[in-house]
Image 1 (tube, rainbow, N blue to C red):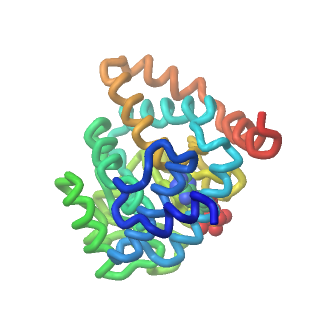
Image 2 (spheres, helix red, strand yellow):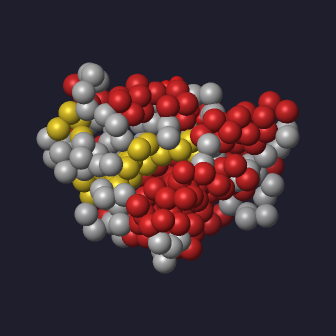
Length: 258
Ligand code: ATP
């Protein structure tokens, strides 16, 4: 049995994962998802999503590649320019980066909205309280009094004064149908997803091909760096971004290691 298996099987608290372990981030991620499932935050299907993500991250070299760092800065600029930015939270996001999402919301003035593929009142409430435990004051998504057009009833549910009205939305680890539907609503969509070929990053205005564990704190750092930038400077950053190049750079790294 490899060290990798041994550590993963024995860990009860994430502090027990040795930070110098060569697969530290992957072990931490797996541990948080397992915990999320146990707490009723993450759906069992979230484990499969995590497995897919982990394979792509391995091929990316488990680091934020330069094109992803640029996309994260552009995402921060969009959030700072937005009138009503919203960060969408699903079961994997809540399990992996709860306090990091709260920090990003604080740094950009964005709202947090729970938005689930497998929506049950219990999971919504479990995620909302998990976010509150990690410092969130206001959590949207509980009212679900509006619908995203052209999606089936359950997956369409959003808050009227949240995602429905938002001009800029961050949708990490989102399924392709919903990402497409949000795009059709005319929103500026920032997608965090490790697979550049997945439909969600393909339709995003800003595809961030990076592990959410690294992407979100980096977006917050960029937002803090840009806090005093003028609107013109932020707009310049946004306009210089080429989404196709970001997707190509990620695919190139995954396929050829370049
Ligand atoms: P799609 O519906 O967009 O065609 P899919 O069915 O593969 O793609 P889902 O299972 O709906 O996608 O969503 C999971 C996505 O999240 C995958 O593309 C996976 O690579 C990505 N993912 C999983 N874990 C992470 C993570 N920690 N950070 C970033 N992305 C991740």
